[in-house]
Every structure is written in structure tokens, then in C-alpha cells.
Length: 359
Image (cartoon, rainbow, N blue to C red; front, side):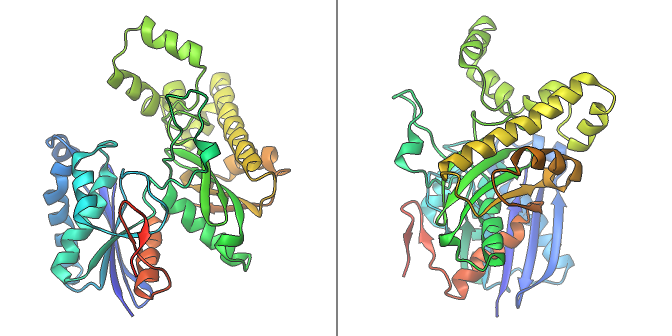
């Protein structure tokens, strides 16, 4: 059996877990002081600091940093690729260092994995990065010839829960049709057909609003808002991506706080109902991509822990298909399982960015 280190960098912490002989033997959420983070110019500048924090954590747990058979990191904002487990290569790291698609903490996952893998003389991997793009050609058409729709989603968790439900149905993933709604700080709703995510809403500027993203907006009013307020590109992006949605309306991204507010504030009640309403619309939209023929609707992500929220949503989508709720986003386990499948030769690794298998 194998010992595998999984690394998942977030904006203010780094989550790690060590798996041995199929069992989790250590897990830690390593916080990073906000004052320290603010001292770095870019996410990649945090690399050495995060590396040393992980090193110390492993030492405190008496786990040698040279004892791994594989190291796997969360995939970052890479070029569009098919889903799968990828070997970390120089080309991948070079792309992440220039942050061509954005400066995000997940960009550190592959680089940290590579540093630890070199110490253990083993391979480094990433699994199902957020840039997984398996759209059909029809799905890429936006309505404006100059703009193509592209995929950006919580692919790691979406793929993991899809595999989970397929196994419970005693079917191969490639034989299943799911609508998967990842409900977290960001919301993405994917249409899964025959093992591929062939369309998605909510990833960037379309679909339902999320705890902090504006989602799809009336284009004429958006254009007027930008020009009337003489906003810069950075200001527009901040407005739409990090200060919209629940934060923009109610000042919080916490669904528990939203429910408390909705119990006595009519405005909050309407915003909550709109939140559920738009997610239900997105699920319905993705069900049409599958011609209404689906095995399950899968609800996942942190918000799926809220029984009250799930109950509200189920009332709107129960006629579409069977509903399975898998709350949370156990990304560390999903990373580990991706690397384990390769080590056990159940899956061939891929090379970035072609997505071709390495035999």
C-alpha cells in the first residue's frame, strides 16, 4: 500500500492530510496570519512560507517529509483541460507562476506538491483542477461571436460526489447522467453525462448569484452601471466576483446568518427566496442539457449542510429527478483517491495541457 500527502491551499490556510494503507493518519488545517499574507505581493510569493509551515506540521506529527509514495495538490487556474489526474510538470508550474488566468491560492497546490515530491523522490500530481473543460461545441456558443463560453467550476468535488453516487447506484460513472450543484462560497451547477461535465452555470458571470458573486445580470443595466459610474476593469471584477450576491445584499456570506435575518427582515427573506429560486433555475437549466433524463440531482458543498436550505430547494426541484445530498467538500480525500487510482494502476495519469494519457 501507499503513503500519500494531499495539499489543498486556501486563501487564509493550507489543508493537508496524510493517507497510509487506505486510511487517513493525519489531517491539519494550517492557518496563515493575515498580516503575513498581506505582506506578499502575489500568491506565488507565499510558497516558501507555506512550505515551511507544512514541514513543521509534518515534523510535529512525526511524519517524515521524505516518506511519501506520491504527493498530490489541488489544481489551480490552468489552461482548459479534460478531467483526470495529471503529473505536475515544469510547463504546468510555469503557467501557474505567471497566473495567466488569475492569482488564486489554488495555484500553489501543484508547486507545493512538486517540492515535497522531490524530497521523497516520488511523483507529484493534481486532480480535476478548476479549469476542467469538457464542454460540447454547442455549449461553447454564447450568443456573441466574439465571446466563447468556457468552463470554470468546482470540478474536484463535483467529480468526487458523482463517482460516489455512481458507486451507490452500482453503475459505472461513464454510464450515469447527473446534475451536480456545488453550493459553497462559489456556486457551480454542472451537467454530467457519460463521465464528462458537458456544461456548467455559475462558474463566472452566468447562472445563480452566490454568497459573494453576482451571477447572471441584465446586460443592458450592467453596461449602463459600468459606464455611468466610470468603473475600471478591476472595480467591475471586484463588484461582480467578490462583493455581489448575498454579501452585496445582506453583508454576509454565511447562510446561517441569512436565515436569522430572514426570520425578521422582509428584505432578507426575499433575497433568501431569490437565492433558492435562482439555484433551482440553474438545476432545471442543466437538466435540459441532459434532455430531462438523469439518474440523480446531487447537492453538495458547505451550504448543503443546512437542512432548512435543502428543504426549500427540494420543493422546487423534486419533480426533475431523484435528489442525493452529500454536504461539504472533502477535497483532500478526493485528491488522495485520484493519486491512489494512478498508483494502483486503476487510472492512467495525464500530461498537461494535452490531456493525453501517459502509458
